[in-house]
Image (cartoon, one colour):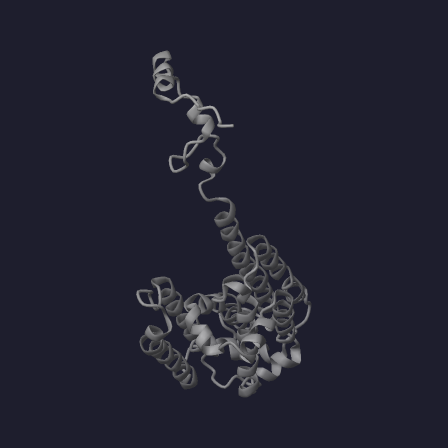
Length: 308
């Protein structure tokens, strides 16, 4: 698709029918599961999905559509590696957590069941396993031969994207997945995501500091926005490090605020909150008059002596 760019005009519209069909299928499947299966899978009176689920699903589909169709897809495939990197950021960092947030727990349990499939998902969602898989695929996807071949080989291109998205979903599962039993504690999530932000530094620095052209398939005579191959690589490295890192750090900060920032004034105050019941010490502090004490003794009965 690239040796001599298949179209001289990078902005000429090119349809991506396979992506249109994929998005239409996912939307139809989601609507079917929510309307037909959902009411049977939840307890009476419980909502099938929440507004948050719906908003996350719409966001995920928009990212999938924008990241996989014209013009971003065509520019990413034929002209700019920086556009290719932006595409990968959308598909590996931004879209997967939205997919998980869009999926209610009952839906994922219906899909995976309780047997072998669940055990497989549970194993590959373990933080160490998921992190190694995801970052391994990220590293492989930046090998020059893989990049050069994927730009001209459709099946390989979609295989790389499928591997990136699927392992990214597993990587996010311990953080925002529907199965709460697979979640890490808040501190563990923050450390986990911090480490995820450190790993991309290696390929990002390699791209930003490379003196020659790393990916020959992007040495096109037609340039977009006047970016040469070297400048294009440097921008791609910045996108990978800053874009992914800033997003992960934003999630870490959000987790920190939710864990430690709820009502800080109340938590750090010695003043008792209205909802707390009065303590015995507080009751003792109430002043009693002599008349009240004498009246209480008068009303009380003298203790009887035990029979022998």
